[in-house]
Amino acid sequence: MHRTIEEIQMRSRKIITGPANVYLVILTFILIYIFNSIAVFAAAMTVFSLLSLHSSGTSYLKFMRVPAIFIIPALLVIAFITPGEKLFWIFSREGVVLAFKTFFRVYASLSVMMYLVITTSIPEILHALKKIRLPEFLAEMMSLVYRTIQIFVDELIRLERSADSRLGFLGKRNMLRTSALLGYSMFIKSMNRAEKLNMAMESRCYSGKIPDPSNNSSGTVYAFAVIAVIFATGVIF
Image (cartoon, rainbow, N blue to C red; front, side, top):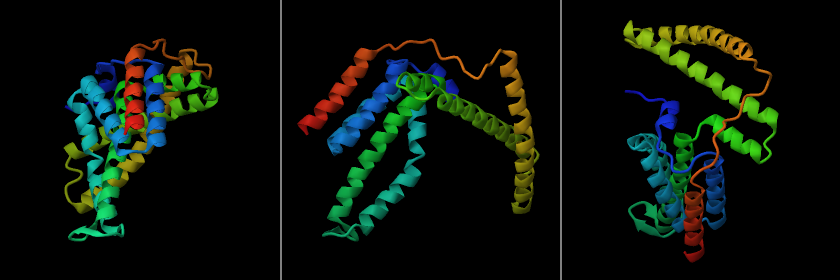
């Protein structure tokens, strides 16, 4: 059964909650940038993979599997085009080293970001960013844009399911015709849904400011421990 991001966020078993989660991710990215070593990449990837597996289980592995389709071919290209001493066949030693380092850097960054995605909702992220002086109007715009994108995606899924049940994608000609009709219908229905969303917000006394989540940070000790492990790895190695 398909699970949405919101369902995974709600059901995830969080060790660290609240703004501390967001600040942990920001500090980790800063340390990754400062040290820029394979040891730090590996440490960040390991720690955040374990946190994500504890939070969402196999859902994390399913999300991480998708980028591999694009990353692995890119790494092969890096190993192929980088000049240097030939290590084996058509790959150079320098290219293999660079591809190896790029792999750890990319997956370390993905692990950190995916942990934030599966444990922290957009309102919680924006609430934490506003505490470090993110402009109020920018946070409200980001929240509304995110909600509008969800409306578009929800309508597209419903329309695709309806068209597929009527064999609308059977054959190239039918697929093109159905896709064109879906694009038109999605635009009209999404505009209607967005208008209803605006009416619902106004009926709930929306005054241009979305209420912030009331949850406070917890698990800050674990957050400090994660930062300490990554920092120590960068200093030692």
